[in-house]
Length: 371
Picture 1: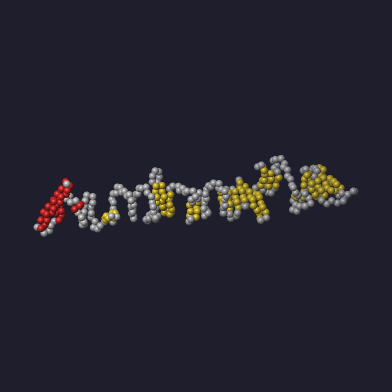
Picture 2: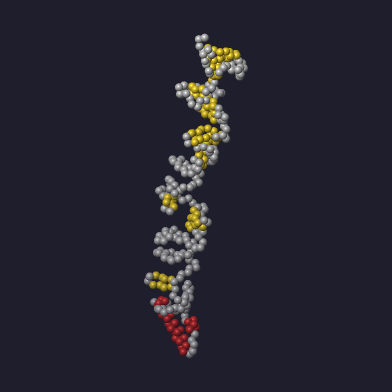
């Protein structure tokens, strides 16, 4: 009853004030409405006494209305604002769905999940440095765009799941096991175990092994091989190849001896001038077996003989040769024999040196015939 009394009392006061003012209005040609409002008792009406109409220049302790056309509409479907500007929003809690056509903020801090039908777009005239940043303990992790040149900069490792690959134009570039078929150039510096290697073109290994695809030559220790295979060690070049289409060649390229040996010991020595030594003069004599026919200084060996020599020979350090008579010049040793190259009846088979000298003392032997 007290609240009702106070309300009715307020109404009485208002009506009394209005009556006094209306009486005064009858005596004034231009009534001062602001003055009338000022004289009305404050807080005299409650919201229940106001229904309909437009309240102009509405103001309260927390609201000031200076709009010239409607900006805020409230109906059963919600609150509709033409434009909403918030200078200092301390906390905003939305339990439902917040739909915003354009959201422009300086910073978003939230645990969120994106469910989008369209991509995230970074736009503007300056795209450098735009992307994703993860800031926390340690350095900032980055996945950003850079235009110098156009590329994405990633500050961390990228780990792909098993069975996944990196592709270019839908063609596999690399996966966990192999490079793609279009990878044809590389500057590899170190590889593990290779099960197979196919190389087209030139090859260089540690600047020591060089293959020249133009000449089809392989060099070890040289960049300019002089044969199909060229090995250079301590300035000596050993070559293996062919002189022409029907002859093979093994030897040295420059004026160097060629030694063939076993047990790291030379057994056959070919000097730079062409002399050949079988065995080693510093070691015990070796055994040389010839399973076939042997000829010396003969272009067309006689197939009927096993040894064909075109010139003098020595047996047990004793000379044996053919001539028309015994020597009259030169030095000879006792036991040397000269065979008669033109034997006839009543002549001798040959001559034997019976005293060493120059030319020494010679005597005939082996008279031909009975007389």
